[in-house]
Length: 290
Image 1: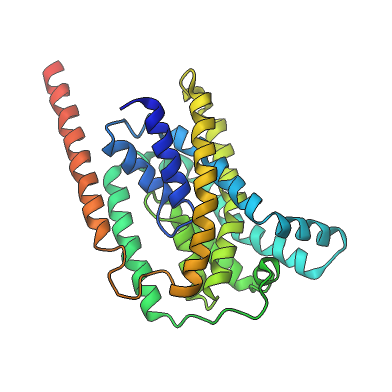
Image 2: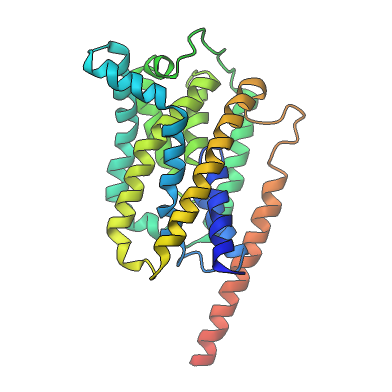
């Protein structure tokens, strides 16, 4: 497969999965492996194209960001509560990311961990959606006001739940959205909170990884990163708009009960098979050299 086609596919996967309650990192790792490439060598590329998805939220919610910025200068309580909640939810990820960065990087190389996390995450989404009584959407529809209405305790808990996404295969958006719903927050607010929280979280993760591993970027990879980021930006804009409309009408799982769970084992089964095949190939090569 040509490298350019892989770059486009990975950009599409990033845009499709970054804000849905499925793991973008997990799907990028599995997609890379299933397409016959070494996921470890492409791990930094997968991080480097995240700014495209980040920019999608900034563009879609630019009025909200503008209103919050203006409100901060005007000392409006709503604007400052909005910023407070996001910073509080962002803080646990900063601490754990700095403390456990090397261990997290090691997990990124394990496709088996990713596959199991995808399965468990899918089950958790369905269980929470079925068992938790979801709060109705508030009369206030301005995203900044809804996020500002989240309590301090809820913001702390969402931040702690987000740390589960440091396990490759656990969805950051899925963890934060379903965690918020379990805390009594309505679906629309939970989704918006997750989108806004993604901006500092993904930005911080991208900067940290690029600073630590910039020397691992292959020559000429800059063009591929720009293409991948552009593709993820376009796809993420479409996905976020459709996702918000879908969640407001149907929730996070289809009403007919079929859900994404039956699909995930087949997808993850392919990943297991691919991972085992690659591991056997490496073991055989090692025995031959010995």
